[in-house]
Image (cartoon, rainbow, N blue to C red; front, side, top):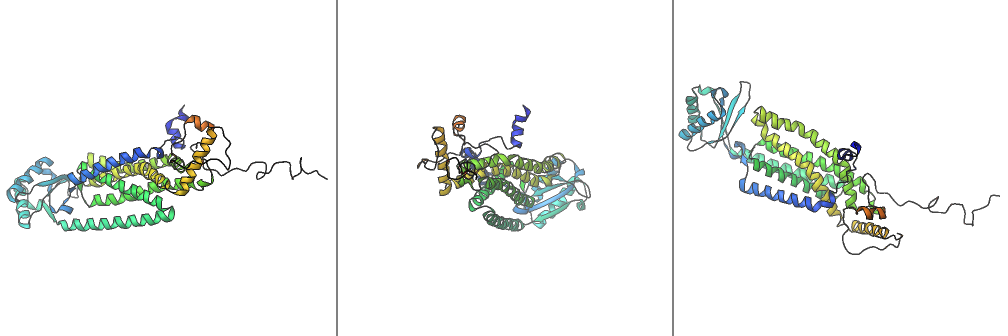
Length: 397
């Protein structure tokens, strides 16, 4: 039946995916990926652009030949005049005067840069004026880095304050942990791929923070809606209500991420890959990877971590034990009342009961349901029908 397919159930929030209950799996996978990212950054490092490492750049017309030919000739000129420097990166760029090749080298003195420029012109048989050269000091890159770190600290502080005021401190901690996971994984992938780190990369890193925060807030808003007044009933644990919120907001987060990734993917794969706009690949990669990872961390890291933190709250612990005790009593066919036994040991699992126990208990949460308070018994507020305290009710005069 098409109506009962996975896509339909995802759109209706009825997929019943046990995300929160399998938090140990997600935390383990995230931990391994973070370890790989840290090792990559520590051992392999980043490919720093001349804005951060310092160096020189030369632009020659694309009419001199292919990009590989231009790189070979510039390397030969550097070997003869540049004192051992070599081409670090080479890419094709566009401009008002036509396409050209930009070749970035190590640090050169002013005399060496002039000599290399003249040698390149001689090798290509063009005028020296057709070759442009620039020199960038590494001090500029260090200033950009320090300001970016300062901006990150201010952003995280404002996020913490907002989330504490909007939700609570546990949600703030879970959201910030998800943001740092996103940054570490994105940095690790960037290090593994070896793309050059430029100021555009830093801007991309700061941009994905806002997107990641939006994804987390969408899920947490649904969690707050499902768990409001949850201790007033014994229908579901906090983890189950949080898992219900993940299922209900999954398609919304997925749709938002896909819509955001489409133009970024076009920027990366079409602009940088097919059209050869090399200046776009550093920004396109960090945005594409960061947005994709932000969707995963908001679902698989932030919400399970929130449920774990909430399980340390004494009120939630007591509530979870009451839910488990009620289900156990109903499963044994006992009448649950105010004096129902409450276990004193053990942690309540966030995973739902097996189908047989759930059928007996009638308390396992269904996706799409909300926590409900106790219903009054009888016709009015628990009082038996018939009116009055007299047997059979009061007689009309």
